[in-house]
Length: 379
Image 1 (cartoon, helix red, strand yellow):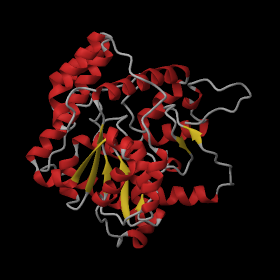
Image 2 (cartoon, rainbow, N blue to C red; image 1 turned 120 degrees about the vertical axis):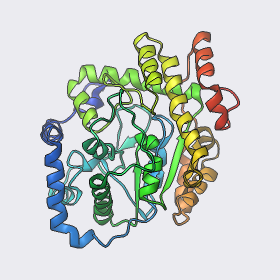
Image 3 (tube, rainbow, N blue to C red; image 1 turned 135 degrees about the vertical axis):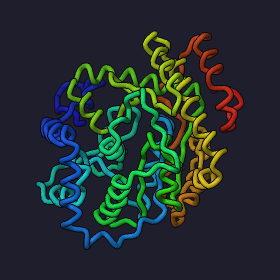
């Protein structure tokens, strides 16, 4: 999404505007999923001799509920010289990263100044910034995702050879394009797929950010209001976000189905009734409750996961970031640790304003799961 140039002060939703070329190319590709797979296979045949021997070693996924701190963790980790990740410039032609990046490199130079992203959360990005673009791949191979009624969990006995071959090749392509040694992705919806990914990549490392329910839900609600307004004022943004695999907020918001259709239906009903805080509280408890169960049931997964509490990241950013880097088995990086210290602090652009009934609902819905992650009370 790009902001339109204007002499007037920008409106809060200006950054939801999607450039015409991106809208056209996105529609051309994402309405033809088999075409994207075919183009990817052609690219593979053309360049396979250049990337096929690149090893996929300890890929890293950052996966948690939206607004948990996953973006800042992605951005800090993406500064590490060993890693390669998706960037804003890679969209829409995600499936052909080699050909697309070669084309982009030959395009006329255009000044690329940092601009605050549509979330209005103080994070500034350029076309070279890392971004979460793995979800369109999952959606292409698994079209049932984000339909609410379908279980979105992937167990460690799942088997999808065509997807698995594609994902491995795609990771190698990105490592080739970026000159990296380790794949890094922010993929929040992968919270329901960690067992499966660990089966595919036994040396994978996962970073799961979490945030105290009250502040987390306040942030989720703020973003949903902003995205609804942005999509109403810029209708093309709705289709753009759907293509990119973002259904957390906005007019197409869909609860994450962790295998319990009754809970998903209840979340949707609460939202429809205007009980936003309680609906989000149930979603928070469902996602992190599912993760807590999986960590308990699968010791190998528990070892591969580092849970990062957002509050700890803001209070002691250097210490936490050092632990994240060590967990990901990356070389030590004092520069990234120092940048974390300089950059991170508790958010100041909003504060929770819940009434007594909303706070009671949040605490009632989240208390048991919150205790699993060291939160004594919903806060």
